[in-house]
Amino acid sequence: MNTDSHNPWDDIVDHHLGLIKYWGDAKFDEKKRIDDWIGNKNLRRAIDESNRKRHPFILHFTKAESGWMTFNGLCIMKSLDLAWFQDEGRPVQNYRATLSILDCNHISVEWLENWRIKEAMSDRLQNAPEAWVDYVNGRKISIMRAWSGKVKSTKEQLPSKGSVEEFALEQLMWMDPFDFERMTVQLIDDVSSGIIQDLEKTRDRQDGGYDFSGTFVLPEPFQYEIPFKGEIKRHRNSISPDHVSRLVARLGRGEYGIYITTSYFTKQAQSEVYEMRYPVSLVYANKLLAMFKQTSHWNDDGINQNWLNSFSTSKEE
Image 1 (cartoon, helix red, strand yellow):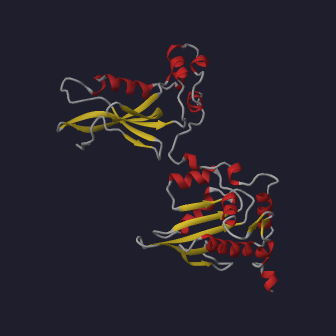
Image 2 (cartoon, one colour):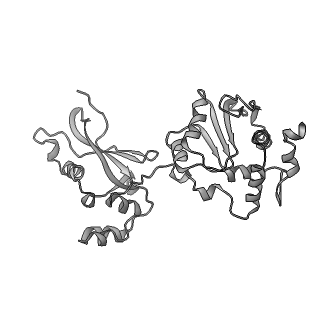
Image 3 (spheres, rainbow, N blue to C red):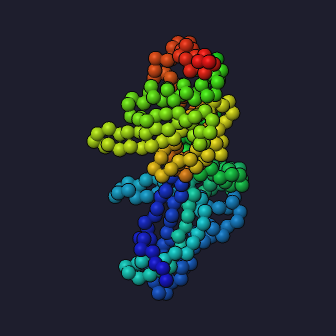
């Protein structure tokens, strides 16, 4: 028999995945079965209820210290499993629930009161969080994750219409793709402040699946080197998870990835990077333009065109 030494009240809150591991309330008692405990009865009732409109919501709190409680989120039951723990050295079978934390930052007291006293579902959902309304109505569940605030919308990644930044982006789109890659590698070098060494662009063709490589060098007292590989795409279309995955597949152990584009990353691509903790930096259009603004290549009209032209291979020919 496998036993789990966790304290029965020692919940695990994983904000990265949006999950909470929650123990039932069983203790060592030779006369009681697992479903005889009030808390376990409620857990069993919640997981057995097939109608979402009758599902109970769960407000999860952690006692940080005496007199203080930390609210961890509005939750729903994802699964309920049998597990073992030790109660003063004696093995006890108990329920262990997995709770999903819904994506909402505010819980209305009015909604809690409505849910308690109202009869009609339309009344009970007044002032309810959008994530709970979606869940009750059978729509896709939105789970809160620690990295969810990092996911940028398309609008946040692209310059506004008619702006100098939009014109600057068009300047880059006019460039030959290989000229653009050479220019971008030089831009990286210009803004690196000396922390990058061995920066070089791969050959224009047969590049091995990445466009540049180099090494981040942390100065004293750290004295640590992090090799990296990067992809550069002069695109108008979105960058999907498949695009990013190809770069990830090229990374060796301990290597970092940089994906630079003139367009934007889909929410799915960003979510995959953050959820899987890929060691990849996503540089979208606005971030790329911000790099230019750190240099003398930027002016009131956009990017210095003469500097861009200096990378033209046709000029060299």
